[in-house]
Image (cartoon, rainbow, N blue to C red; front, side):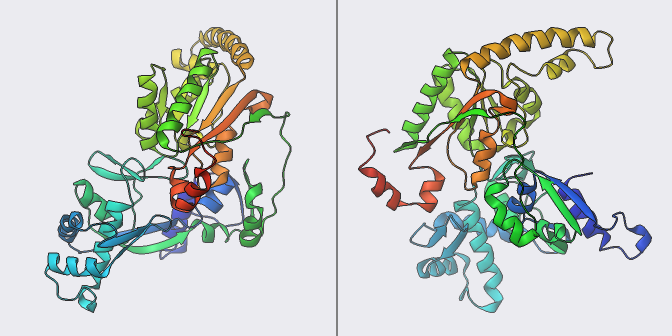
Length: 426
């Protein structure tokens, strides 16, 4: 067994070898994929690329980065957040030609310059620090939009990564050339037999059937679900939404109910954290910046009065035990091989069982979503952290008309539609 990345790269490396005996991978006969919707659908278009160095000069990225601040949005260029593209206007083309002292940007000799200007515009206008990437140890590291985790070693192609490096003022690495490439979709379709499991495949049954020739079969839960999924609340702006979330957390905190607050990226989790600090609500933050404490934070997220703010990192495949995780607490105190381990585990088991009764009486784990994700399955994964194995729990999403989803996909149409039916705040 292994990760999807490792299997994909093994396949690419094998295809670059000259002798059959150097191959490391067996024939692609049968695969069982865990969290199958994440790998076969969310990451289906993600290309795995083996690249090699080129002798291209990286100075051009700094040169182009210096002219980007002189270009004004809507006057010199337009952006499309939905498709993540940037386009120069006629005025923008003239401005760039003046700034770079180029006579014709569309001359075949200058097409590469035009491409890098567009990548520079994307780096400055669309790709955001603590949303799409973080800067760590002087390097730009991509944050996975689906899992919320950082992806060291993975780079954007076509000069985009270099444009972001120039924007952030870190060392710009040389452009690489692609030696071998494959997408997850094409890799997994080469298996003679394919299967997988996940809690959120039903909404994508048509795609599984059309692309992978896979049927989706729903298996009933081990125990009846007791989780209450409450209606979404919609607010006019972000300020009103965050205040409402803080009030709701205060209510749950007072009655000793644990709360997991799901945010879509690092920036939003840190804004919410500062609001809770103002309200003097103790809490933990789990995102790509604090990932080293993940095991500890998740182990305690189900304890009474515990408030945890998390990105998508806590959304998929995470088991939050009500009352806390006695096994983690015991192993944190003594090694499993230690003769006193059984006694220590028993002590923590009794304490967590007592706390579990308090949490169950308070209504179980409360999942609060701070906005809807583009993929409904990611929202369902977050909801699925509560009410596991027949435990009580509840979930609710708090939305505002300033959320990315409304702004990018709904625009003013939604605001006009809702304007009459919403009060000042809610």
